[in-house]
Image (cartoon, rainbow, N blue to C red; front, top):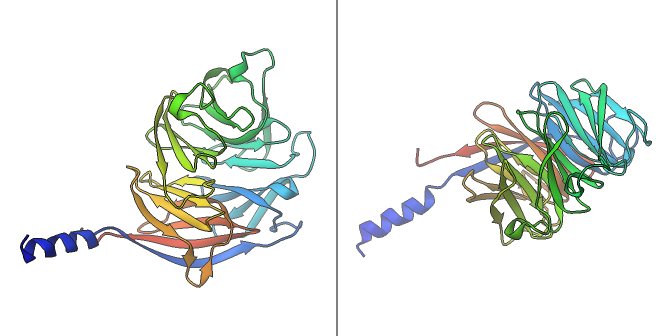
Length: 304
């Protein structure tokens, strides 16, 4: 092989995307007052730029501006409307509604974008077994009006239509290669794929919109992949609290980067995250312990 060809190969290997991150700030802290947290476990951001956080230990949902300024909260321990028992996940990307996985109350709570209660979805005991649920770990809502529920007890995903009727269930023991063992969170891509993180399998499962298994993304350093987020390019962001890192993959499943150090700050226990496109850059919001860390993220493409 000539030296010129060797040089071309070396230059080509250096021409991958570089990712530049910078910590911008943080908010939160441990406590029960407004703006503080006790074991927060999930974060999502609405289209109009408001942050929603499941403050699990305080049994409430808190809302903030993109800069981390407190706006409002709703909840408190209980089983009535506007009360929660360890809320586990939240979906806020619809233009008008917010869905909350109320774990111990075994229901999905529906609120409007200003956190006013709308309705509750419970399991229908008269329905077929595959459409019944109890331990709701996570929920997602599609532009078509379908609700996806991740049931941790039976390790399955249930898809309900806009009339709250079960249409399909998948991921459980009869799902072959798509069988889940310890699922954590569910998300949807903009091209109609269903994404589920599975800490037991140390991977991220992909299904089509009808529940057919497609493929799994793994990484040799995964220990407990849990929180997942997708940007406008369908790049996948995975938080791994046991690894203390964020893993980033391309829309095609190619590993791009591992984030464990943001400036001088080491991530300790990143449990969940959300990402926002802010023009030429992205902003990551990472739940790390009882704080939310805000950092900028820019993709540099030297080959372009």
